[in-house]
Image 1 (cartoon, rainbow, N blue to C red):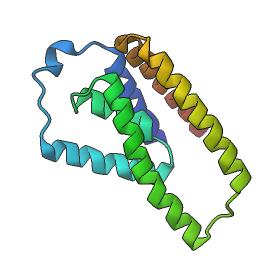
Image 2: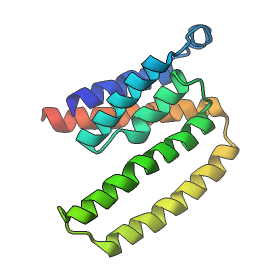
Image 3: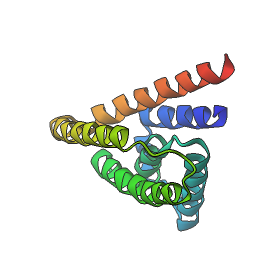
Length: 149
């Protein structure tokens, strides 16, 4: 978890500091994207956190996407990762599935997603990117505080 927090802080720094002059000259190879994807998958699988907090910065900084494209792509990637894992967990019955809690969280998270999409339409991409960087840093500091105390 400490490693994840440091990676989140690094991603936050990259989102908050303007690297516009080197981002155009930085070309990402297929090998680099594959390596980053595998690393993200391992981190997400081991910790259960990090999907959107690490995928969005990678898509922004190394994939050449804008903020809205990165968010949409991240949601698709998270769904593609979560659905098979969820199905596998249910099939193996390693945990007790609480349908009522699941449906409540699903309903409220879908509602929040729609509100967030509407807000994003009227907000400048740079502002969203900076706010997301701050959020990542705050969560990383919370993880460090929890792990180190």
